[in-house]
Image 1: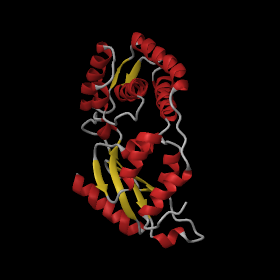
Image 2 (image 1 turned 90 degrees about the vertical axis):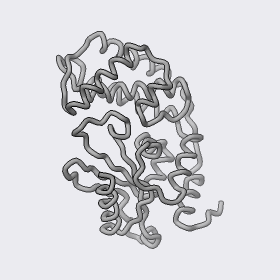
Image 3 (image 1 turned 45 degrees about the vertical axis):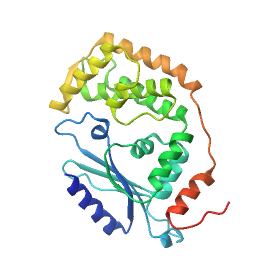
Image 4 (image 1 turned 90 degrees about the horizontal axis):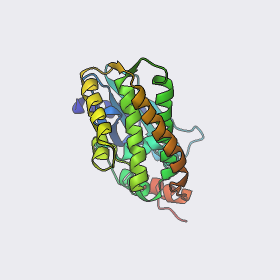
Length: 256
């Protein structure tokens, strides 16, 4: 499958006249709990030829390929990625730290990772994961008799990330197993997650009985983190730092 993905990325470069600098796996395969029928969620950062950035017609900043079978490709232009990095966009941060890398050219991804480790807003990341947890609960669990095992796992991963932010004050690992190995959490919760993983790996769309006691614990976690996140660090950076990264990648010397 890796070669199929690399071939598709090469075709994308040719069709869109771009250079792909960085391509990774996102979603459940990167998180470490893909099922046998999970999609491949390929995410990438690319740049256009320099002259296109000087044109009055702005080059396309998103490439979204039609989903084919189990392959889903989505990419952002280098400038768009820089703007999202400036805002500590959680999706981009997860791309940068994905454990499954298909392409990495030049220094831009490393520079973005280094920036994220020192400058990312942990508060923004916290509110993102809190929103994921709350949204999954309200939309897929509240007042339900059965719940998708996958949705339970998405919610739990968001809570695990919140625990990491609270306990380590740093960017959470993408792999859920690395998260679990390095946070303090009740053993029953870890066992429950393992049980859900085993069920989901057999069937992506599996439903399990709703558990009201489990739901009470989830809501208590959400309420506690609602208060804690307000005290998370909220770093601010200057645009010039990211401008310098991008211009360097395109072959320019940045003058302050």
